Amino acid sequence: MAAFDIRRTAQVISAIENRSEGADAIIRDAYRGAHHVPVVGITGPPGAGKSTLIDRLAVHWGEANEQVAVLAVDPSSAFTGGALLGDRLRMDRAAAHPNVFVRSFASRGQLGGLSSTTIDIVMVLGSLGFDRVLLETVGAGQADLSVGMAADVVMVMAVPGLGDRVQAAKAGILEIGDLYVVNKSDLPGAATAAGHLEANLDLVYPGAAGRNSPAAAGTSVGGNREQHRRHGHPAYAPGYWRPPVLSISAHEGSGISELAAAADDFLAWSRETGRYGDRVSERLRAQILGAIEGRLMQLCLAAGRQRDLELAALVAEVASGGASPDEAAERLIEQWMAAIRGGRA
Amino acid sequence: MTEDHKIRVLIAKVGLDGHDVGARLVARGLLDAGMEVIYSGLRRTPEQVVRAAIEEDVDLIGVSILSGAHIAHLSKIRRLLDEQGAGDIRLIAGGVIPQEDIATLEQAGVSRVFVSGTPVSDIADYVARIKACV
Image (cartoon, rainbow over all chains, first blue to last red; front, top):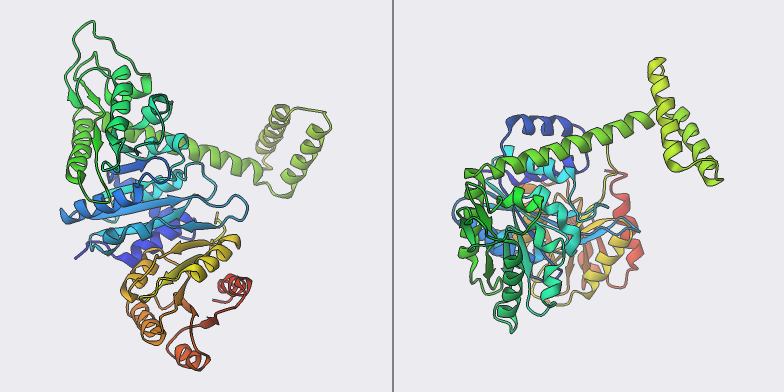
């Protein structure tokens, strides 16, 4: 018997997505409750098998009596605003499991499909009693950097035959994974794909897959500050995490328990070393900055007709070469500040 | 500040037939009309359809049935929706449905039946209007 009510959960999610009446209060209460539910992000190219894998993982954790929410994102049309949300149909087992809740989202113009709303929804799911969230993103490859912000553990999926060692080395893919997953391990080329990933990881991380003690002095260490923040700097205590490369077949269900265990091991390691808390802080900082940006824009432009006219005049001026967009923005902000000082905003 | 409310629709294939070209055509039409369309996949049971509709908080379910079991499946879907507190989710149907069964279906709670051959734009227009007169 699930701990969550399906209809209520679904309607609350809609309210937040649409920012309807009452949504702000629900969101506020959720953040105040500070129940941070762990988010497993799954990303990778189209056709890699993300939905099939999520189906398996959701059932795995559902069977362990966790209340699991699956959020699957598909792209919205830039022209019509509509979307075809076709991830859920690959998640039959998850959709039928009493401990699993599956919801599809359209990206609604957000590159990668994730936004501050996604994070608000995750917080609310935490307050509704969910134990884990599985987040599937649009899978446009490099555009999925945002999944690293929304998720506490990121699985990057690869499939055999999609490119060579250089392809595997491209920026973006190697910088966001906490675990790498080669799916369709029954196909030829799977071992090669795994080998390419390991070879590229060798350039950045010394040591073995998973937990490592600090590297011996003088060991060559690669990576950038972002990776060191997430996985620890190999030269310093208390040690570091080298992303493992796991081979699975989501379709056949092989390698799933090992993958789930590796993800949980990463979560445990990141809690023990404080990295988890850092990640949450980073995410909340981005939420606050995003909220400030949105609010400022709203306040600046909310003076109705007057500001519309000012803006229209500035647009005409920039179009005719009378000012640059930066100069126009400065001017509008000045006008707004003056209105505030004069009590007219 | 409220965002525009997107219309969410579940297009469901119920029953044992495997022909979903019609369903996918309608899904495409609704997508082009700016709606968010969840496609159920083939051979769904009424229970699966109702659960999906509730989890996805859709405004409407469009069921495509070509197998002849429309009266049984559609009345069951309507009943399950009502029992689970989702009486406000509308139900429409299309596929191979004889004229003489339409009255029975409407009595059983199907809001509209779109017989094979209906232009997709008619369906899109109907769905677009449901938010306006709820």
